[in-house]
Length: 317
Image 1 (tube, rainbow, N blue to C red):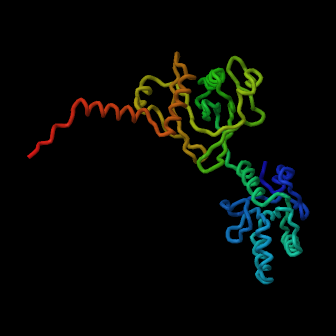
Image 2 (image 1 turned 30 degrees about the horizontal axis):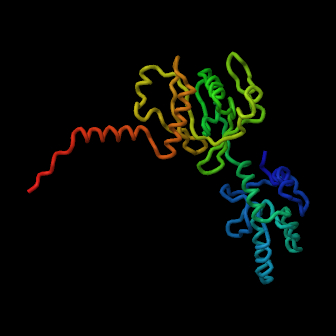
Image 3 (image 1 turned 60 degrees about the vertical axis):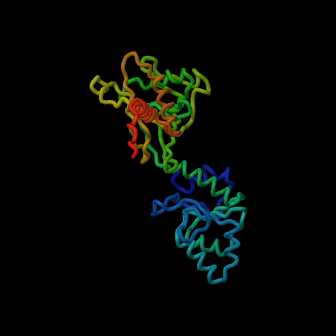
């Protein structure tokens, strides 16, 4: 789990050429501060300080140009904000003033040979993925026509059988039973599979199937953005009649604060659910592009009515 400075260094240190310039702190140093909205990583910022403050050549030039009093006040302010660590990029050697204050405040110093912007970009991406808000939803997550589709419904409703049918039609499995979703951007939910469940699909009567072994590498996918939720429900006739025949059952499902389009897919004997899911995905792709068949149908009927019953001529004086 990524929740401390030490865990970040352990996982990214080799790739990002990170090294300790002061002794590694004990116990583990938390990445998050008291302010949950505080930025985790960025260049030197004394107004909105980051938890990981990066000092590169521009900051080094700025500090060197300050007078002695302003220089000391700036360093005091930097350490008073209690950053999780200060990272010196571009193989910059720490000054004696910086080392002295780091030891006095027990603030870790790290160094890297990478450039400041490259370092910030890599760490920002890593931390966004590692610290994203997460949620596990019972269902089967599958890629259909390039869209991430979550199949949900009551136990034994046929989610896994439908997923297997879709896989045989060329679509790809991401996760069965417990797909894990993370909010990686304000409006983006990404789904993946726990390592212990990856490649496996449970089908009642057949047991556990290894989809990678049965269908090959192209039948599985590591992660995908969630685009559509399909809720499989066995509906009685009165419930079916309540579904709008023009717009269908389109609604939204809240996943980690993001509204994901959801449709209710009635389950009944004789219905080819795989074809229906493919059609639902194609329909959603058209919606994303700005086309809605229901609206088009209504407009076409309205035009036909107007042509059949034209407006009366306007009387002229």
